[in-house]
Length: 155
Picture 1 (cartoon, rainbow, N blue to C red):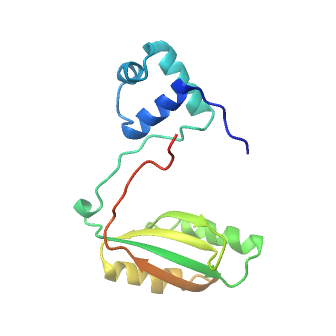
Picture 2 (picture 1 turned 90 degrees about the vertical axis):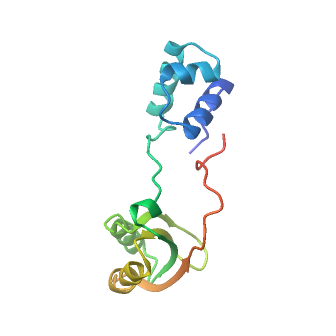
Picture 3 (picture 1 turned 180 degrees about the vertical axis):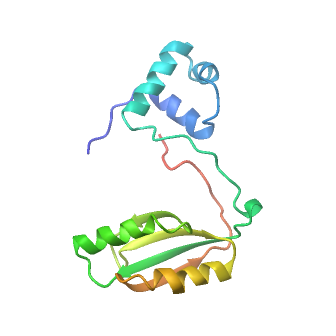
């Protein structure tokens, strides 16, 4: 998969939208130094190319009662393509798992989990995660405090 060629204006658009995805097209156009119609065309082109995947509200988890953030490193019993796909599909059914990556190294998957509290997280690990037929090992890391939160890509 090759890198998409972007010009300076496209890069400015992406930076501005990562910082504030709620701004109007007129405001975005003003910030990047072009008029509104070509700005809208560029944004649509970036969306159609799959570079902009969507727009999301960033929620404050603790204010919603989700005080625990943890990461789980999961090793599977067997790393066959079928088992990897089956476990990846299972992660989509678990609300506590907010993001999941297939990784290389000592583990097969890295799961980003958000739970109401330690008890709910422990219940998930014991009753759901380790109970999954494909799981061999689970190592968990509880977070203390988030110290950086940015968009996923610096363009």
